[in-house]
Amino acid sequence: MWLEILLASVLGFVIYWFVSKDKEETLPLEDGWWGPGVRPTAGEDKSIRPFKVETSDEEINDLHQRIDRVRLTPPLEDSRFHYGFNSNYLKKIISYWRNEFDWRKQVEILNKYPHFKTKIEGLDIHFIHVKPPNLPSGQTPKPLLMVHGWPGSFYEFYKIIPFLTDPKNHGLSDEHVFEVICPSIPGYSFSEASSKKGFNSVATARIFYKLMLRLGFQKFYIQGGDWGALICTNMAQLVPSHIKGLHLNMALILRNFYTLTLPLGRCFGGLFGYTERDMELIYPFKKIFFSLLRESGYLHIQSTKPDTVGCALNDSPVGLAAYILEKFSTWTNSEFRDLEDGGLERLKVYVPTGFAAFPCELMHLPEKWVKTKYPNLISYSYMPRGGHFAAFEEPELLAQDIRKFVGLQERQ
Image 1 (cartoon, rainbow, N blue to C red):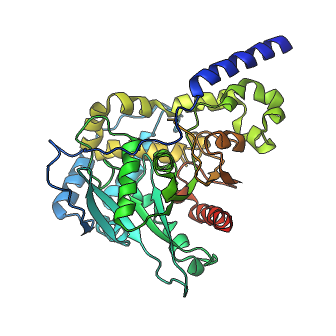
Image 2: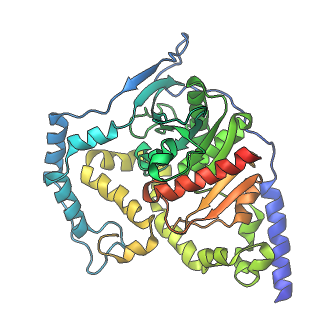
């Protein structure tokens, strides 16, 4: 048995050595053009334009007609949410949307914060920019860029923004007050989608960096989960001297020595630096592994055939609702599947980093794992509750952890 363990460890180390050696310490900044056609010879319009969310009777009537014409198939008996969004419960969602939901009131809620657009690398980039309403005398707000993921949007941050921009009136200390910028990833919400192939998280990171410069911020904090975590990580790799601190509530760490310890970690977790809480959240790994397979089917089709699934989702509001709300159910807590209502790894990042480990995230990352990617990890927190959509589910908890991280960073 010990010989097998030794051979497996040696083989794993050799494989890791060859596939994970860092070639460079930062990503090249480069430039890009993602708008339609050829990049114009004239300079890009750098103006920042106010934007307002609007709808019309025509749009609402069209939506109602599409909802009225929906065709649903009955679910398997006693299937709950184990096969996706249960169509019996979807009927309740449809009824609420059709007969009770106030679309115009929602537009007012969306316009609660100031919206803007600006052209960067050929794309119209949408963002909200919220300044502190009651800044303490002599204090300067800390700029904070917050980036959403899929299937989220800038709206994920509406609940957490008051805790960051107006903490004293929301039960928190005003030692750290933030000026919050929440952009929409190109192709999401009101940001223009790329017209060119090859658009990725690095290009998005560069565009958001240019956005912050355009707003007058040379140094700033960044925060993200899901794709937002990867985009913010890429920003820290592109322009580390401009990033005061990086806070994450998810990380994509695929290549590191610790992933090779998973088969042995159940018996020898202490040797690899796993805490008891890590062991609780990682094992049995077989369950976690199959859960990841079960929850990642969307990722494969969206990575390979986005135009196909896009036609269906863009044409059917009910289909889009089921597609997205299913993830809000399962990614908040995997046990919600049992309820009837569904109750890239690149280079190391040396920017000061904080990490909030929410217990119902898709995959738990022990502190040791996070440090392999983010060696300047100055804050790691086991969060008491919450899942994938942290800012939306537990805004106060996430705000407190961001403030704790910033406090540690400012005192260094």
